[in-house]
Picture (cartoon, rainbow, N blue to C red):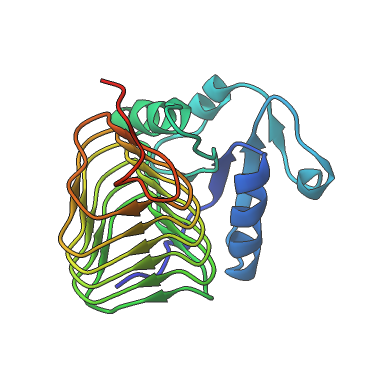
Length: 217
């Protein structure tokens, strides 16, 4: 079952662009927002309690709230993963968030903290691991396994049986053919076409990444 958890108040970590998109999903699902944690907030969050520091979360008992990781993800940036790890290790829980405008197979598995945005399609037998973003309009075909702390950017297409490791970033509009493995912390550039395996921490850049490869190990 891929329905979001709704039985406790939630606190958002972050108030940037990704938070704004999540905020719309949360309001649509009528979740109870207990506060926003960010150094500053803009007008769209002004009706909710504002917490300036991450440590303010510690005033909430771990059993009384859920956290939503509303920090976005850029290539090579680790803040989102670090926040998730920190508060998970303390016992705080992160529910999965699935837009009502996404299509998720009943046989797909979506783990804690994963976020599936509007227009995304997750097909039969796919697995989305914890704290991963499947962003707007992405297609995750059958039996893909998407690792923890990934960002699958808007418009990405992953053919059947693709496997990604932990901390992988796949840029806007990239395509990956079937059964390819992308190892931990690899970065796939916007618009890249991936036709072979990608090594750990490798960068694949350019419109045809098979022809234009930059390695950073």
